[in-house]
Image (tube, rainbow, N blue to C red; front, side):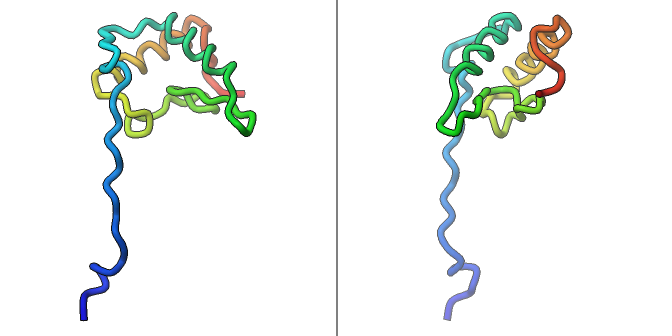
Length: 96
């Protein structure tokens, strides 16, 4: 008789996320270009009619690195660009 730990089921390792900024070889993230990209993505809606933004949640929070799949270097510059865009009133501090 085998242990219950072995019979619980097969857990598949999740696929490793790749940083989109590293793939596109982006050195610096410009906050104005970031706002334009976010606005472009807001116009696109999914099946349920919900807006799908990539780096900011609907309530206005910055999505963490483990969820978005961005590397450490680019997550730091991404959060800095989002904060700069908020101060320049290009992005809201809170969601709707």
